[in-house]
Length: 231
Image 1: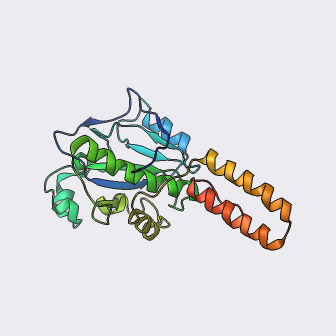
Image 2 (image 1 turned 180 degrees about the horizontal axis):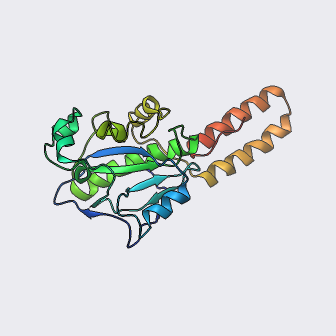
């Protein structure tokens, strides 16, 4: 079971969305925001935005914002009818004539080129599993987190969005982590408490080997709780 993390609701009356028309989502599309988290928040909440939205955004510090209820369609992966017909993407070919927004959930990532921070990567892995589990609970539909069901925006719209979610997006590592299943996620406060406890024992010994081992264990705890590792 995927453990809990905080998801901050950021949608408002201006956030674009539509009914899913009875279609159950089963595809996750990854995006890059090409900006900061604050600019993403502002844009998806702006009365002047009549073009786009996303279900979730993942910040570089690992925090997660939600803009659109997963039961509704966000405006993130739409295509013109001619582009749907011409697409070579398997999931689009399997849904001829259907707007990809209707069967997808979108994740934006703060940044420019897809080079995610460690905290951001861990949060994104967790969010993929959360979305899959939420869909299963809401609609009873189950699907694998594989390369058919987890894709990038550039695959949906190679002409209009050829670089989204970025050339440095960690696809191989993402699928490696998703294949592991629902690993336990340690809370940051608990991880830091363990690190503080270990620090006292490490300082009591004072040896170089103990210092090296403490540093390694502390960083493993930070990674397990979605925090940045320290050099």
